[in-house]
Length: 328
Ligand SMILES: [Zn+2]
Image (cartoon, rainbow, N blue to C red):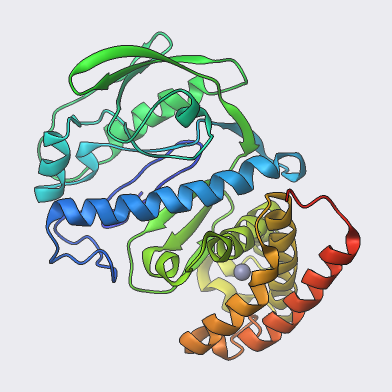
């Protein structure tokens, strides 16, 4: 996690934002009232989580790395400072204790009756540590609590959560769901950007807004998830060790183009299995190319939006002709 970023994770959610220098996205302006900023971020977080949760649960059988998800996104007061933290403390959040930021529809947390604002006090016999609600934004204590939750969500066995809602404590039984073992992070940023780092998928708030439907958002998240699933980072780092220092410029463009094409193709297959309208992908890339010069023209190892769209037309036809069960 890093300051100024906001993140939500499907299997184990983290969301961070920083009042002082938190990035401002079109819909998350730092001039907005803190409550409005948090609400805008929460809306996007819920959208990203919902789409990502569908992708990682519908495709669990084809993922090399599998884990168990609660279908929630969590955050804590101490990840923020200033007015954003103040608003959350009034809403009942406390120190390092994780609280629900969003739940995926029909996911384990939703089925357990959890909703935004519920504070997690403990899981099975483990008591989470609140720490102090003071000082600058910090993450260590929150991360330690998230690690304790992650350890408990280790298999299909139900866990018992101790939860506080509007001052009252109760116990909630949650049954984890099998999923691809990757997280998703929403980064508050004006840049139209998404990336995959091998274990997580990152998407900027600006790109979430640019994707007008959940199907379009699934094009983005499916592509990045495919990079992780196909282990592109590990493969490219092994083939071109200088990539760790010089980034993709150290990789032959042909290799990158192949990785991009494979991620586009696999991404659509992931969408199809999760029941998303994968046929929107070529049109999305054409619109994306018109709106953003960075993807309009071919870049090092990345084909132009028009070339991508044409390749995706072929993938759509291929999936339609395959007669494969598409989840719809
Ligand atoms: Zn890519």
